Image (cartoon, rainbow, N blue to C red):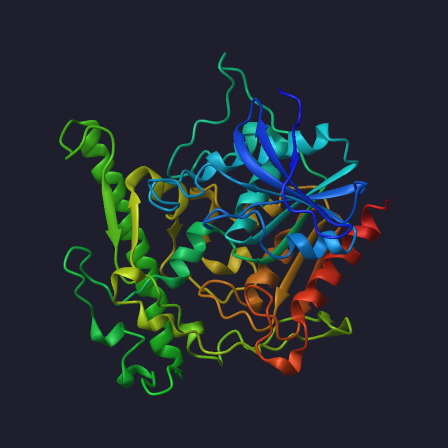
Length: 437
């Protein structure tokens, strides 16, 4: 391991922002340390996102620093990758970069190290902590990609340094599960893109209003759509495995891998039918006042339907990346994207290492799950937060909601006030209560 290094790049008043180049046995990453002042806090929050152009200055990094909690934000090996952050992503590889960051901040002398995951970053951080606590035993032997585990150059198990807690803000139940939830079940031919009009959620005869973008779907229609989503996911799994087997037998286009373009991946019914996922199933603190209440959705219609049939609505992956990052087995007769527990979802989390819920069930550290009631994204809603919180197996789990906060915690509209500041206050308060200076 090399000694930590840093150089100041953007001082602002008493706050400091320093650039760090991290190179150690786990990885090589670029990072920025956000600090509220010249003295480091006792606790540092480590942050990255698997799909962003850069994670170095995103919310809530400066907001937490302004509240006296340092944040170490880093870019991972897939950030600005020439192959694209999705195309060649191997989900498990993120853990090595998180490990590099954790080891680096430990060496800087921080007493407590927390992991912060947002959206698709939640599965990354939960997976990391799971592996850091349990080693390669945390990896699912049933995972589609058969990831072999973490080894050093001598073939010995490479143990990752664990963190002391998890903060999960507006996170998915897993990268593969979130992909399933937004797959367009109307697609019946992956090559031509042909669809079944009777399963298309963006047709007026099925309950969608093209003038407003909103929809009201009948329960029977939704059951058929959910089944179709599950069947399509299983077909994609089978096709990917078959094509990789052909490559292994020397019958592929390429000797090592191939590509798959998955059309129409912006079709989650909850993004347009606001009656779905409209309320929580149990009481939780709802901020700004923090009173116990049933959270109620305040989200707007998501207009991603405009992209669903375009190239922008497609996903492009190498086959091995798909198995690692996006694919999961699911029971078509039981699939329920609105489930508030993993058991009720019908998703077989054993077939992927990307499951947030499976990882959370086996971590021992405190966990904060914080969610905005105005989350308009295509894969995170109130039931998502409830399912993540219900999955936690440790003794200290907190579920909290921010009234009117959207996916990035900006307010749905002005009546909800500064939801970003409210969320930052909740996170900072939770951290201080458990990790005192």
